[in-house]
Image (tube, rainbow, N blue to C red; front, side, top):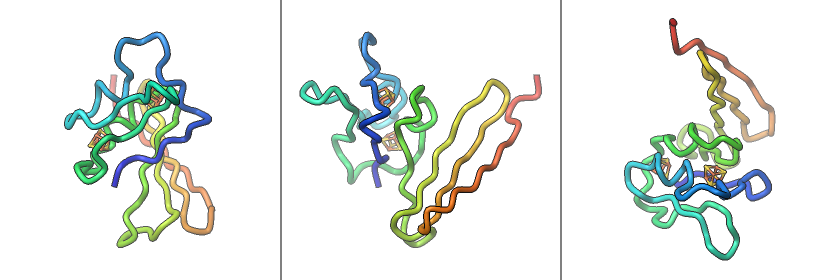
Amino acid sequence: MPPLVNASRCTGCAGKEESFCERACPGDLMAVSPQSGKAFCRAANECWDCMSCIKVCPSGALELRIPYQIGYFGARLRPILGRNSITWKCRDINGVESTYSYRNRTN
Ligand code: SF4
Ligand code: SF4
């Protein structure tokens, strides 16, 4: 399931030759629409939810749609990368958001 793009947050990585999400996707699936200037996944069926694009987006514009087998429709997961940590914001199907932060660097 491809990432969900929050159009109000996506800047299209304006000024960059290639957007962060395009560079990060190992399957070359992300692109920025020349019409809207917003990111989209050009081959939804080929996305394997690796979250690389979601982690690198500097605007927090991408979210993982949690598969219904785990979270049912409407559940979302968004990582926010810090210098030495990662924070996960998880929204359940009722809109309740939980935040989990972990250190991911030791020096
Ligand atoms: S990295 Fe984020 S802000 Fe940049 S084009 Fe992709 S979704 Fe938009
Ligand atoms: S989640 Fe992974 S495979 Fe899917 S579009 Fe993003 S970087 Fe590509």
